[in-house]
Image 1: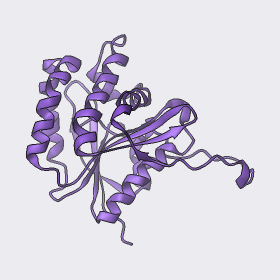
Image 2: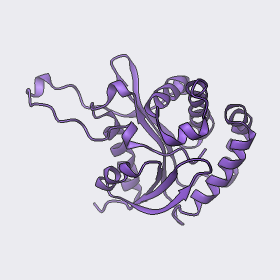
Image 3: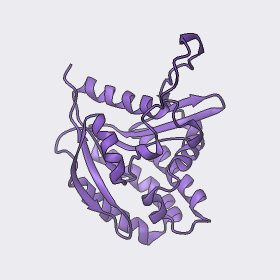
Amino acid sequence: MPVTPSSPDAVDVRERERPDRGAAERPPRPQPRPARRSEVGDVAEVLRRAFIGDPVIDAFFPDADERPRRARRMFAVQAAFEHLPNGLVEVVDGRDGIVGAALWGTPGTPRTTRTLSSLRSAPHLVETLGLRRVLSLGTLARDCARLAPDRPYWYLADLGTDPDARGTGAGGALLRSGLGRADADALPVHLESSKAENIPIYEKFGFRVTGTVRMPDGPELYAMLREPARG
């Protein structure tokens, strides 16, 4: 599903300042790694927690009692059917398990592969979102696609950290990992953000707003693009 926005507000890409206590006392820098298929549930749970209060998730699931379960299932469908087989899922580990995750769409995925993934995920999305919202989502996806680059690019679908891990640098590590990969490919990165207040954060990483799309019965999404850094 190509439209759940990345949210640095839910990620905290800005590591909080700490007093310098010496290298021996500093925690190790978060190291992103590829997720395993067996970790889909953990990835879905950390993203669910990261996106608590996100306007897109609230619009998808207006029933607050059902929202946690359905949001978790939606993220699991994204990871299992779209990004693990056809893209990239990276995670950061904490002391007690995964504390951050990023779902990336890779450049050059054949159209037939994307179509098959959509067909496989469709029944699960209908069960999770309901048919009306799935159809609305398809319209939104087409609107967002019009603002995507007309050349190969990396797509940041979701990036989030557990609220208890905010300020540890996990979100920033995940974002920098993906940007470094895109730079190595000399390709741009595209995303949609659901909050205007997140725009300045992404701008610090080289993104700029390229347009907006209004989600039916939901927030305005801000399409953003980052050109590859010149090495």
